[in-house]
Length: 478
Image 1: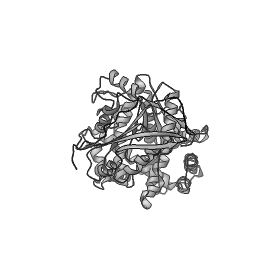
Image 2: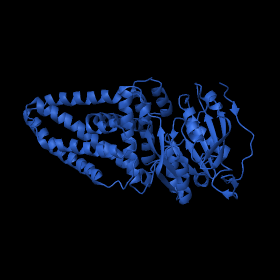
Image 3: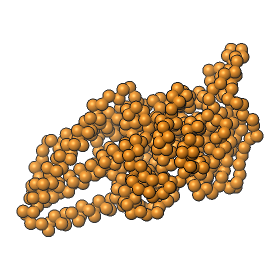
Image 4: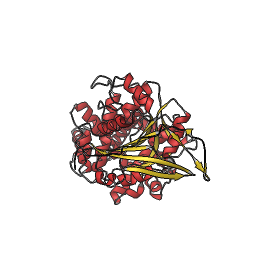
Protein backbone atom coordinates (compact mmCIF):
# COMPACT_ATOMS: atom_id res chain seq x y z
CA UNK A 1 0.00 0.00 0.00
CA UNK A 2 1.31 3.42 -0.88
CA UNK A 3 1.97 5.19 2.39
CA UNK A 4 1.37 8.61 0.93
CA UNK A 5 -1.73 7.89 -1.13
CA UNK A 6 -4.65 10.22 -0.48
CA UNK A 7 -7.94 9.97 -2.32
CA UNK A 8 -9.72 13.31 -2.06
CA UNK A 9 -12.10 15.52 -3.98
CA UNK A 10 -11.79 19.17 -4.89
CA UNK A 11 -15.15 20.49 -3.70
CA UNK A 12 -16.34 23.75 -2.28
CA UNK A 13 -18.50 23.28 0.80
CA UNK A 14 -21.40 25.66 1.37
CA UNK A 15 -21.37 27.90 4.44
CA UNK A 16 -23.72 25.71 6.43
CA UNK A 17 -26.99 26.56 4.65
CA UNK A 18 -29.34 23.93 3.33
CA UNK A 19 -32.41 24.37 1.16
CA UNK A 20 -35.23 22.11 2.31
CA UNK A 21 -37.69 21.02 -0.39
CA UNK A 22 -41.06 19.82 0.80
CA UNK A 23 -43.66 18.47 -1.60
CA UNK A 24 -41.83 20.05 -4.50
CA UNK A 25 -41.79 23.58 -3.03
CA UNK A 26 -38.57 25.40 -2.16
CA UNK A 27 -38.25 26.93 1.29
CA UNK A 28 -35.91 29.71 2.33
CA UNK A 29 -32.37 28.73 3.39
CA UNK A 30 -32.03 28.08 7.13
CA UNK A 31 -28.82 27.98 9.17
CA UNK A 32 -27.89 24.76 10.86
CA UNK A 33 -24.72 23.54 12.50
CA UNK A 34 -22.12 21.71 10.46
CA UNK A 35 -20.48 18.42 11.42
CA UNK A 36 -17.25 16.88 10.19
CA UNK A 37 -16.60 13.22 10.97
CA UNK A 38 -13.10 11.79 11.45
CA UNK A 39 -12.60 8.01 11.42
CA UNK A 40 -9.13 6.82 12.52
CA UNK A 41 -8.81 3.37 10.96
CA UNK A 42 -6.24 0.68 11.76
CA UNK A 43 -6.74 -2.72 10.08
CA UNK A 44 -10.52 -2.37 9.89
CA UNK A 45 -11.19 -4.27 6.65
CA UNK A 46 -13.97 -6.29 8.30
CA UNK A 47 -15.94 -3.31 9.57
CA UNK A 48 -15.09 -0.09 7.70
CA UNK A 49 -17.75 -0.66 5.04
CA UNK A 50 -20.48 -1.06 7.69
CA UNK A 51 -19.22 2.00 9.56
CA UNK A 52 -19.44 4.19 6.46
CA UNK A 53 -22.82 2.81 5.42
CA UNK A 54 -24.21 3.58 8.87
CA UNK A 55 -22.88 7.15 8.74
CA UNK A 56 -24.10 7.87 5.22
CA UNK A 57 -27.63 6.69 6.01
CA UNK A 58 -28.09 8.65 9.22
CA UNK A 59 -31.27 10.66 9.70
CA UNK A 60 -28.82 13.57 9.78
CA UNK A 61 -25.47 12.56 8.24
CA UNK A 62 -22.27 14.60 8.63
CA UNK A 63 -21.41 17.11 5.91
CA UNK A 64 -18.01 15.51 5.45
CA UNK A 65 -16.29 12.28 6.48
CA UNK A 66 -12.51 11.89 6.59
CA UNK A 67 -11.30 8.29 6.87
CA UNK A 68 -7.71 8.45 8.13
CA UNK A 69 -5.99 5.11 7.64
CA UNK A 70 -2.73 4.54 9.52
CA UNK A 71 -0.23 1.72 10.08
CA UNK A 72 -2.57 -0.60 8.20
CA UNK A 73 -1.52 -3.86 6.57
CA UNK A 74 -4.89 -5.11 5.35
CA UNK A 75 -7.41 -3.98 2.69
CA UNK A 76 -8.99 -1.13 4.71
CA UNK A 77 -7.82 1.57 2.29
CA UNK A 78 -9.12 -0.16 -0.82
CA UNK A 79 -12.50 -0.89 0.74
CA UNK A 80 -12.90 2.67 2.07
CA UNK A 81 -11.71 4.17 -1.24
CA UNK A 82 -14.86 2.90 -2.92
CA UNK A 83 -16.83 5.41 -0.84
CA UNK A 84 -14.71 8.44 -1.70
CA UNK A 85 -16.82 11.12 -3.34
CA UNK A 86 -20.18 12.80 -3.04
CA UNK A 87 -23.15 11.02 -1.47
CA UNK A 88 -26.82 11.99 -1.19
CA UNK A 89 -29.31 10.79 1.40
CA UNK A 90 -32.94 11.86 1.79
CA UNK A 91 -34.76 11.72 5.10
CA UNK A 92 -38.18 13.25 5.72
CA UNK A 93 -38.08 15.25 2.48
CA UNK A 94 -34.68 16.69 3.30
CA UNK A 95 -31.78 15.73 1.05
CA UNK A 96 -28.35 15.76 2.66
CA UNK A 97 -25.01 15.83 0.86
CA UNK A 98 -21.96 14.16 2.39
CA UNK A 99 -18.45 14.23 0.97
CA UNK A 100 -16.19 11.29 1.85
CA UNK A 101 -12.41 11.70 1.78
CA UNK A 102 -10.06 8.77 2.28
CA UNK A 103 -6.45 9.30 3.38
CA UNK A 104 -3.75 6.71 3.92
CA UNK A 105 -1.08 8.42 6.02
CA UNK A 106 1.07 5.28 6.09
CA UNK A 107 3.33 4.57 9.04
CA UNK A 108 2.27 6.85 11.85
CA UNK A 109 4.28 6.79 15.08
CA UNK A 110 1.47 8.59 16.95
CA UNK A 111 -1.05 5.89 16.02
CA UNK A 112 -4.68 6.82 16.79
CA UNK A 113 -3.70 10.22 18.21
CA UNK A 114 -1.85 11.07 15.02
CA UNK A 115 -4.81 9.96 12.87
CA UNK A 116 -7.27 12.04 14.88
CA UNK A 117 -5.10 15.12 14.71
CA UNK A 118 -4.59 14.66 10.98
CA UNK A 119 -8.34 14.59 10.53
CA UNK A 120 -8.77 17.60 12.80
CA UNK A 121 -6.32 19.60 10.68
CA UNK A 122 -8.55 19.00 7.65
CA UNK A 123 -11.76 20.30 9.23
CA UNK A 124 -10.91 22.64 12.09
CA UNK A 125 -11.61 25.89 10.21
CA UNK A 126 -14.90 25.14 8.49
CA UNK A 127 -17.14 23.18 10.87
CA UNK A 128 -18.96 23.65 14.18
CA UNK A 129 -18.56 20.10 15.46
CA UNK A 130 -16.15 17.20 15.08
CA UNK A 131 -17.61 13.70 15.29
CA UNK A 132 -15.00 11.10 16.20
CA UNK A 133 -15.96 7.54 15.23
CA UNK A 134 -13.77 4.46 15.53
CA UNK A 135 -13.27 2.26 12.50
CA UNK A 136 -15.27 -0.58 14.09
CA UNK A 137 -18.18 1.42 15.56
CA UNK A 138 -21.63 1.15 13.96
CA UNK A 139 -23.99 4.04 14.77
CA UNK A 140 -27.72 3.61 15.14
CA UNK A 141 -29.58 5.47 12.35
CA UNK A 142 -30.43 8.56 14.44
CA UNK A 143 -27.27 8.76 16.57
CA UNK A 144 -25.72 11.82 14.90
CA UNK A 145 -29.01 13.70 14.96
CA UNK A 146 -29.52 13.02 18.66
CA UNK A 147 -25.96 14.00 19.56
CA UNK A 148 -26.28 17.24 17.59
CA UNK A 149 -29.63 18.14 19.15
CA UNK A 150 -28.27 17.73 22.67
CA UNK A 151 -25.05 19.64 21.91
CA UNK A 152 -26.90 22.55 20.28
CA UNK A 153 -29.45 22.70 23.12
CA UNK A 154 -26.71 23.11 25.74
CA UNK A 155 -23.85 25.40 24.61
CA UNK A 156 -21.74 24.49 27.66
CA UNK A 157 -21.25 20.98 26.26
CA UNK A 158 -17.68 20.58 25.01
CA UNK A 159 -18.21 16.97 24.09
CA UNK A 160 -21.00 14.42 24.21
CA UNK A 161 -20.67 10.67 23.88
CA UNK A 162 -23.09 8.07 22.60
CA UNK A 163 -24.17 5.14 24.74
CA UNK A 164 -21.96 2.19 23.79
CA UNK A 165 -22.63 -1.50 23.75
CA UNK A 166 -21.02 -4.47 22.05
CA UNK A 167 -23.08 -6.02 19.26
CA UNK A 168 -23.89 -9.58 20.41
CA UNK A 169 -24.22 -10.68 16.77
CA UNK A 170 -20.46 -10.24 16.35
CA UNK A 171 -19.55 -13.07 18.72
CA UNK A 172 -17.66 -16.03 17.22
CA UNK A 173 -18.10 -19.08 19.44
CA UNK A 174 -18.53 -19.95 23.11
CA UNK A 175 -15.58 -17.96 24.48
CA UNK A 176 -16.34 -14.99 22.25
CA UNK A 177 -20.02 -15.09 23.27
CA UNK A 178 -19.06 -15.17 26.95
CA UNK A 179 -16.62 -12.26 26.58
CA UNK A 180 -19.10 -10.24 24.50
CA UNK A 181 -21.80 -10.65 27.15
CA UNK A 182 -19.35 -9.70 29.89
CA UNK A 183 -18.29 -6.57 28.03
CA UNK A 184 -21.95 -5.62 27.48
CA UNK A 185 -22.54 -5.86 31.23
CA UNK A 186 -19.35 -3.91 31.98
CA UNK A 187 -20.25 -1.10 29.55
CA UNK A 188 -23.82 -1.02 30.86
CA UNK A 189 -22.75 -0.65 34.51
CA UNK A 190 -20.23 2.09 33.67
CA UNK A 191 -22.69 4.03 31.51
CA UNK A 192 -25.50 3.80 34.06
CA UNK A 193 -23.19 5.22 36.74
CA UNK A 194 -22.47 8.18 34.45
CA UNK A 195 -26.12 8.69 33.50
CA UNK A 196 -27.17 8.78 37.14
CA UNK A 197 -24.52 11.41 37.91
CA UNK A 198 -26.23 14.10 35.90
CA UNK A 199 -25.14 12.45 32.62
CA UNK A 200 -21.64 13.76 33.34
CA UNK A 201 -19.35 11.47 31.36
CA UNK A 202 -16.00 10.67 32.91
CA UNK A 203 -14.57 9.60 29.55
CA UNK A 204 -15.71 10.80 26.13
CA UNK A 205 -14.82 7.56 24.41
CA UNK A 206 -13.32 7.77 20.96
CA UNK A 207 -15.79 5.16 19.73
CA UNK A 208 -18.45 7.83 19.01
CA UNK A 209 -18.28 11.32 20.50
CA UNK A 210 -19.30 14.73 19.19
CA UNK A 211 -16.98 17.63 20.13
CA UNK A 212 -17.51 21.34 19.90
CA UNK A 213 -14.83 22.63 17.55
CA UNK A 214 -14.51 25.79 19.63
CA UNK A 215 -14.02 23.75 22.81
CA UNK A 216 -11.23 21.75 21.16
CA UNK A 217 -9.50 24.97 20.15
CA UNK A 218 -9.92 26.34 23.69
CA UNK A 219 -8.24 23.19 25.06
CA UNK A 220 -5.33 23.73 22.70
CA UNK A 221 -4.96 27.34 23.84
CA UNK A 222 -5.33 26.59 27.55
CA UNK A 223 -2.79 23.77 27.49
CA UNK A 224 -0.43 25.27 24.88
CA UNK A 225 -0.97 22.31 22.59
CA UNK A 226 -0.64 22.30 18.82
CA UNK A 227 -3.38 19.66 18.57
CA UNK A 228 -6.43 18.60 20.63
CA UNK A 229 -5.15 15.06 21.21
CA UNK A 230 -1.68 14.50 22.65
CA UNK A 231 0.46 11.48 23.49
CA UNK A 232 0.84 12.39 27.17
CA UNK A 233 -1.55 9.56 28.07
CA UNK A 234 -2.26 6.10 26.66
CA UNK A 235 -5.96 6.93 27.04
CA UNK A 236 -6.10 10.04 24.87
CA UNK A 237 -9.88 10.26 25.19
CA UNK A 238 -9.69 10.39 29.02
CA UNK A 239 -7.06 13.13 28.94
CA UNK A 240 -9.05 15.25 26.50
CA UNK A 241 -12.15 14.79 28.67
CA UNK A 242 -10.20 16.06 31.70
CA UNK A 243 -8.94 19.04 29.74
CA UNK A 244 -12.43 19.93 28.53
CA UNK A 245 -13.77 19.88 32.09
CA UNK A 246 -10.80 21.96 33.25
CA UNK A 247 -11.71 24.82 30.88
CA UNK A 248 -15.31 24.80 32.11
CA UNK A 249 -16.85 22.77 29.30
CA UNK A 250 -19.28 19.97 30.14
CA UNK A 251 -18.58 16.37 29.13
CA UNK A 252 -21.84 14.46 28.82
CA UNK A 253 -23.23 11.12 27.76
CA UNK A 254 -26.31 11.18 25.57
CA UNK A 255 -29.50 9.76 27.02
CA UNK A 256 -30.61 8.38 23.65
CA UNK A 257 -27.85 8.26 20.98
CA UNK A 258 -26.43 4.76 20.63
CA UNK A 259 -23.58 2.98 18.91
CA UNK A 260 -22.29 -0.59 18.67
CA UNK A 261 -18.57 -0.87 19.28
CA UNK A 262 -16.10 -3.57 18.38
CA UNK A 263 -15.63 -6.02 21.23
CA UNK A 264 -12.69 -8.20 22.17
CA UNK A 265 -13.32 -11.83 21.26
CA UNK A 266 -10.38 -13.60 22.91
CA UNK A 267 -9.12 -13.58 26.48
CA UNK A 268 -5.73 -12.40 25.24
CA UNK A 269 -7.20 -9.46 23.29
CA UNK A 270 -9.48 -8.41 26.15
CA UNK A 271 -6.51 -8.41 28.52
CA UNK A 272 -4.49 -6.20 26.16
CA UNK A 273 -7.30 -3.66 25.81
CA UNK A 274 -8.27 -3.52 29.50
CA UNK A 275 -4.70 -3.30 30.77
CA UNK A 276 -4.02 -0.40 28.38
CA UNK A 277 -7.15 1.40 29.58
CA UNK A 278 -6.31 0.82 33.23
CA UNK A 279 -2.66 1.87 32.95
CA UNK A 280 -3.69 5.07 31.20
CA UNK A 281 -6.33 5.83 33.82
CA UNK A 282 -3.90 5.20 36.69
CA UNK A 283 -1.37 7.51 35.07
CA UNK A 284 -3.94 10.31 35.05
CA UNK A 285 -5.10 9.55 38.60
CA UNK A 286 -1.77 9.25 40.35
CA UNK A 287 -0.22 12.49 41.67
CA UNK A 288 3.11 13.67 40.36
CA UNK A 289 4.72 14.57 37.05
CA UNK A 290 5.49 11.66 34.73
CA UNK A 291 4.98 13.38 31.40
CA UNK A 292 4.04 16.79 30.07
CA UNK A 293 0.68 16.40 31.84
CA UNK A 294 0.79 15.87 35.59
CA UNK A 295 -1.49 13.41 37.39
CA UNK A 296 -4.74 14.98 38.56
CA UNK A 297 -6.00 12.83 41.46
CA UNK A 298 -8.75 15.27 42.50
CA UNK A 299 -10.14 16.04 39.06
CA UNK A 300 -13.96 15.62 39.02
CA UNK A 301 -13.79 13.30 36.00
CA UNK A 302 -11.58 10.88 37.93
CA UNK A 303 -13.83 10.35 40.95
CA UNK A 304 -15.56 7.44 39.26
CA UNK A 305 -12.16 5.99 38.33
CA UNK A 306 -11.05 6.10 41.96
CA UNK A 307 -14.29 4.43 43.05
CA UNK A 308 -13.79 1.70 40.44
CA UNK A 309 -10.24 1.01 41.58
CA UNK A 310 -11.11 1.05 45.29
CA UNK A 311 -14.05 -1.27 44.61
CA UNK A 312 -11.77 -3.61 42.65
CA UNK A 313 -9.28 -3.65 45.54
CA UNK A 314 -12.08 -4.67 47.91
CA UNK A 315 -13.23 -7.38 45.48
CA UNK A 316 -9.73 -8.83 45.27
CA UNK A 317 -9.23 -8.72 49.04
CA UNK A 318 -12.56 -10.38 49.77
CA UNK A 319 -12.23 -13.17 47.23
CA UNK A 320 -8.59 -13.95 47.86
CA UNK A 321 -9.15 -13.72 51.62
CA UNK A 322 -12.11 -16.10 51.45
CA UNK A 323 -10.18 -18.65 49.38
CA UNK A 324 -7.21 -18.58 51.77
CA UNK A 325 -9.27 -18.68 54.96
CA UNK A 326 -11.53 -21.42 53.61
CA UNK A 327 -8.54 -23.56 52.59
CA UNK A 328 -6.89 -22.96 55.96
CA UNK A 329 -10.03 -23.82 57.91
CA UNK A 330 -10.70 -26.97 55.89
CA UNK A 331 -7.11 -28.13 56.38
CA UNK A 332 -7.65 -28.38 60.14
CA UNK A 333 -11.37 -29.30 60.02
CA UNK A 334 -12.31 -25.94 61.53
CA UNK A 335 -14.76 -24.68 58.90
CA UNK A 336 -18.40 -24.29 59.87
CA UNK A 337 -20.81 -23.34 57.07
CA UNK A 338 -23.08 -20.37 57.73
CA UNK A 339 -26.01 -19.49 55.44
CA UNK A 340 -25.14 -15.81 55.96
CA UNK A 341 -22.39 -16.29 53.38
CA UNK A 342 -25.07 -16.79 50.71
CA UNK A 343 -26.29 -13.20 51.07
CA UNK A 344 -23.40 -11.44 49.23
CA UNK A 345 -23.66 -13.68 46.13
CA UNK A 346 -27.44 -13.22 46.16
CA UNK A 347 -27.14 -9.43 46.28
CA UNK A 348 -24.49 -9.51 43.55
CA UNK A 349 -26.81 -11.60 41.36
CA UNK A 350 -29.71 -9.18 41.89
CA UNK A 351 -27.42 -6.24 41.02
CA UNK A 352 -26.18 -7.98 37.87
CA UNK A 353 -29.78 -8.72 36.89
CA UNK A 354 -30.72 -5.08 37.45
CA UNK A 355 -27.92 -4.03 35.08
CA UNK A 356 -28.89 -6.69 32.52
CA UNK A 357 -32.51 -5.52 32.47
CA UNK A 358 -31.34 -1.94 31.91
CA UNK A 359 -29.68 -2.90 28.58
CA UNK A 360 -31.71 -1.78 25.59
CA UNK A 361 -32.15 -4.68 23.20
CA UNK A 362 -31.06 -7.14 25.86
CA UNK A 363 -30.90 -10.78 24.87
CA UNK A 364 -31.62 -13.92 26.90
CA UNK A 365 -27.92 -14.54 27.35
CA UNK A 366 -27.53 -11.12 29.02
CA UNK A 367 -30.08 -12.28 31.62
CA UNK A 368 -28.61 -15.75 32.03
CA UNK A 369 -25.12 -14.29 32.38
CA UNK A 370 -26.32 -12.41 35.47
CA UNK A 371 -28.79 -14.97 36.82
CA UNK A 372 -26.38 -17.92 36.89
CA UNK A 373 -23.89 -15.86 38.98
CA UNK A 374 -20.81 -17.85 37.94
CA UNK A 375 -20.40 -16.33 34.43
CA UNK A 376 -20.44 -12.81 35.90
CA UNK A 377 -18.14 -13.95 38.71
CA UNK A 378 -15.63 -15.46 36.27
CA UNK A 379 -15.64 -12.27 34.21
CA UNK A 380 -15.03 -10.26 37.39
CA UNK A 381 -12.04 -12.47 38.21
CA UNK A 382 -10.68 -11.69 34.76
CA UNK A 383 -11.15 -7.96 35.37
CA UNK A 384 -9.32 -8.31 38.68
CA UNK A 385 -6.43 -9.82 36.76
CA UNK A 386 -6.41 -6.82 34.41
CA UNK A 387 -6.44 -4.53 37.44
CA UNK A 388 -3.46 -6.27 39.04
CA UNK A 389 -1.48 -6.27 35.79
CA UNK A 390 -2.15 -2.58 35.22
CA UNK A 391 -1.04 -1.50 38.69
CA UNK A 392 2.02 -3.76 38.49
CA UNK A 393 2.96 -2.13 35.18
CA UNK A 394 2.47 1.32 36.63
CA UNK A 395 4.53 0.76 39.77
CA UNK A 396 7.12 -1.21 37.81
CA UNK A 397 7.67 1.94 35.72
CA UNK A 398 8.25 -0.24 32.67
CA UNK A 399 8.36 1.76 29.45
CA UNK A 400 5.87 -0.32 27.47
CA UNK A 401 4.00 0.60 24.32
CA UNK A 402 0.59 -0.60 25.47
CA UNK A 403 -0.96 0.26 22.09
CA UNK A 404 1.49 -2.16 20.47
CA UNK A 405 0.86 -4.70 23.23
CA UNK A 406 -2.88 -4.57 22.58
CA UNK A 407 -2.39 -4.92 18.83
CA UNK A 408 -0.10 -7.90 19.44
CA UNK A 409 -2.70 -9.49 21.72
CA UNK A 410 -5.45 -8.99 19.15
CA UNK A 411 -3.27 -10.83 16.64
CA UNK A 412 -3.17 -13.78 19.05
CA UNK A 413 0.38 -13.30 20.23
CA UNK A 414 1.84 -13.00 23.74
CA UNK A 415 1.11 -14.77 27.01
CA UNK A 416 1.10 -11.84 29.45
CA UNK A 417 -2.60 -12.40 30.08
CA UNK A 418 -1.68 -15.55 32.05
CA UNK A 419 0.45 -13.58 34.53
CA UNK A 420 -2.37 -12.97 37.08
CA UNK A 421 -3.16 -16.71 37.14
CA UNK A 422 0.47 -17.56 37.85
CA UNK A 423 0.76 -14.83 40.49
CA UNK A 424 -2.42 -16.02 42.20
CA UNK A 425 -1.16 -19.63 42.20
CA UNK A 426 2.17 -18.56 43.71
CA UNK A 427 0.48 -16.43 46.39
CA UNK A 428 -1.96 -19.18 47.40
CA UNK A 429 0.78 -21.84 47.39
CA UNK A 430 3.13 -19.66 49.43
CA UNK A 431 0.40 -18.78 51.92
CA UNK A 432 -0.59 -22.42 52.39
CA UNK A 433 3.05 -23.47 52.84
CA UNK A 434 3.48 -20.77 55.49
CA UNK A 435 0.21 -21.89 57.11
CA UNK A 436 1.39 -25.45 57.63
CA UNK A 437 4.58 -24.18 59.26
CA UNK A 438 2.58 -22.59 62.09
CA UNK A 439 1.62 -24.14 65.38
CA UNK A 440 -2.00 -24.95 66.20
CA UNK A 441 -2.18 -21.91 68.49
CA UNK A 442 -0.99 -19.55 65.77
CA UNK A 443 -3.33 -21.12 63.21
CA UNK A 444 -6.27 -20.66 65.56
CA UNK A 445 -5.31 -17.02 66.15
CA UNK A 446 -5.06 -16.34 62.40
CA UNK A 447 -8.54 -17.76 61.82
CA UNK A 448 -9.96 -15.92 64.83
CA UNK A 449 -8.70 -12.60 63.44
CA UNK A 450 -9.07 -13.29 59.72
CA UNK A 451 -12.72 -14.28 59.61
CA UNK A 452 -14.06 -11.20 61.45
CA UNK A 453 -12.02 -8.89 59.21
CA UNK A 454 -13.44 -10.68 56.18
CA UNK A 455 -16.98 -10.43 57.62
CA UNK A 456 -16.70 -6.67 58.01
CA UNK A 457 -15.16 -6.10 54.57
CA UNK A 458 -17.79 -8.27 52.91
CA UNK A 459 -20.57 -6.48 54.80
CA UNK A 460 -19.35 -3.10 53.54
CA UNK A 461 -19.24 -4.31 49.92
CA UNK A 462 -22.66 -5.94 50.24
CA UNK A 463 -24.19 -2.71 51.53
CA UNK A 464 -22.64 -0.78 48.62
CA UNK A 465 -24.07 -3.30 46.17
CA UNK A 466 -27.45 -3.12 47.86
CA UNK A 467 -27.40 0.66 47.51
CA UNK A 468 -26.93 0.26 43.75
CA UNK A 469 -29.69 -2.32 43.60
CA UNK A 470 -32.15 0.06 45.25
CA UNK A 471 -31.30 3.25 43.38
CA UNK A 472 -33.76 4.46 40.78
CA UNK A 473 -32.64 4.32 37.14
CA UNK A 474 -34.96 7.21 36.30
CA UNK A 475 -36.03 5.65 33.03
CA UNK A 476 -32.53 5.39 31.60
CA UNK A 477 -31.56 2.42 29.48
CA UNK A 478 -28.01 1.61 28.42
